Length: 370
Image (cartoon, rainbow, N blue to C red; front, side, top):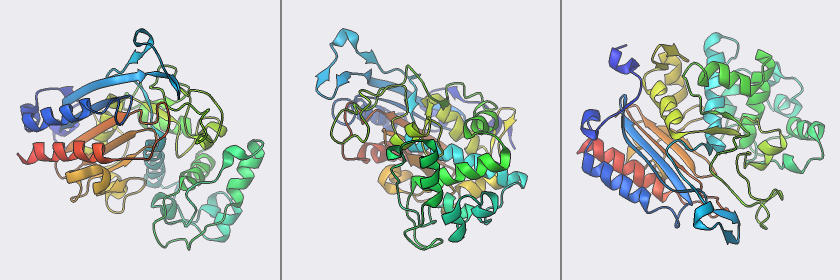
């Protein structure tokens, strides 16, 4: 692998990254319009190769004290490029990498039955659900299970173990948080380590991602006022504690949600995968296993989804979105990456709209083409 591929990220002008500065200026202009319409605040970071060509923060990390009351301007917390965010479903990407690391080491079989590793997952064992089906959302499990409504940890675990698929495993794509919760059970059983430790020791620590970890994270961008009727729990304004109700009920460490991170750390994560699993002197995956992770249909990652990848989609772009307003895209065809983090659920959750994500990705795609 060439030294350029192994180089660590550095900030530089668009021209150094082989990107059109006018398209990137328009990308930033678009993001600057988002506070007050799409989110309270946002951070965008984009680049190509080892060069970060865009890094901008807009709006507020904390703007509201409740769903009905804004903080006075002098008490608001401005967004900055180092603000941590509740990643929500971007956590799934880290769980997927942790799983592929075990596949690379030979301790986990991609087409193995998960019941062979954790027989207590009785419903999954009965229906012969495999590791691959969890990673590709083809297990047939329903999207969500209200574990937060269970009275205690034992009841939550029993409900997860008894959950039966609603569609035939190995069939159609059906996105489900339960896939990563079951995968967490498998990973923790075969390694004897909790998921937070697996991700810390196998991914974030070797890559120097010091701003990434499971909460609490007191200075994170605020999320929802959960006293509103749409909220499933009454927790008041949520900031620095995981927003996802099931992850919260599970103690904040879950395979589908719970991680906090910064835009720069996520850029390191993207750069590592674009460089075949290496960053600087650290390697977290071999190139063949990065390819296994990212090639269609993707393991944990979504591939070529125009609804949030815009014009980057089409040649193998991979990424994900999170309910709190987070997203990332990496494109091996152009060696580009885009991280857009926003607190779209602050102060209340609204109907998801990925138009700003797709528009930002399209600007980056045009910056390569022009």
